[in-house]
Length: 65
Image (cartoon, rainbow, N blue to C red; front, side, top):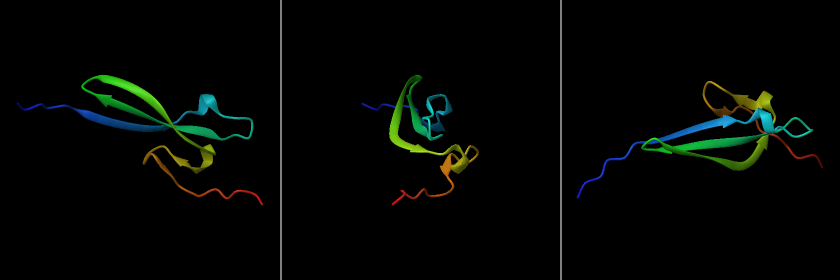
């Protein structure tokens, strides 16, 4: 028995949930055959470090000592 399913992944920066320090969480939308769900990756970055075209983080953040 063969099954064919369509899978799609979409990454985005959820600016609406930004914290007071300006960092926003990275989310992924997983879509399988038209059914989708949104999941937080548990990482936050500053919007200046997010490239919307490539959906990648463009710089690293260092933790203050």
